[in-house]
Image (cartoon, rainbow, N blue to C red):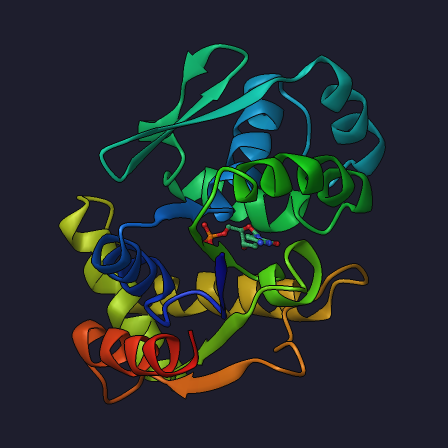
Amino acid sequence: MIIAIDGPAGVGKSTVAKLLAARLGYLYLDTGALYRAIAWKALQSRTRPTDHEQVTTLLPTTSIHMQFHHGAMQVLVDGIDVTGELRAPEVTAAASVVSAIPAVREWLLPIQRQIGRKGSVVAEGRDIGTKVFPEAPFKFFLEADADVRVARRHRELVVAGRGGTVETTFRDLSDRDQRDRTRSVAPLVPAGDARLIDTSALSPDQVVEQMMAVVSIES
Ligand code: DC
């Protein structure tokens, strides 16, 4: 049983996906962490994330493992726990860049699908409903007004001790959105059968309630 949640940065995907997974007792799969792991590896090995060829040559010698403990996810790259480093601003920017490389997306597909086979999963990302789990019985696509998304992301960064200005947050979010929506492979678009939820005026709990209503009526 897979529940797919897609949408741009700052719509509250992670918060909602975690809450929903906890409510249902499902595994929470943050697929962005996998793109961040590749970005981390590229930066670590002094490979420019924009260099498709070089990033692609890193893949065969890279191992990525995700471990799940009581709802929390740990990411190991080549045996090193990099979980705490994946949300650094330079990794965030590089993740969006490497995610446009077709070979990276192909390489990560079986890893995501294998985790999906572990059982009941709430998977969150950009192409879960369109590409990774197109057969998922429940698909949600979250949207929110740009100013709301910027404010949410800025607050998150401040809480994490990584807050820049609202202007830099706006610029980073717009750049990332533009790249994620316009890349040639698996761009960020809602699946034809996804339910759209505008989270601008909703709390995470309200979004989860809407999802729970759909899941419990239809399952
Ligand atoms: O969800 P996130 O911010 O952790 O994702 C980081 C980047 O990874 C994002 O800019 C786009 C990319 N990504 C993707 O292309 N496909 C996914 N399923 C998840 C993330």
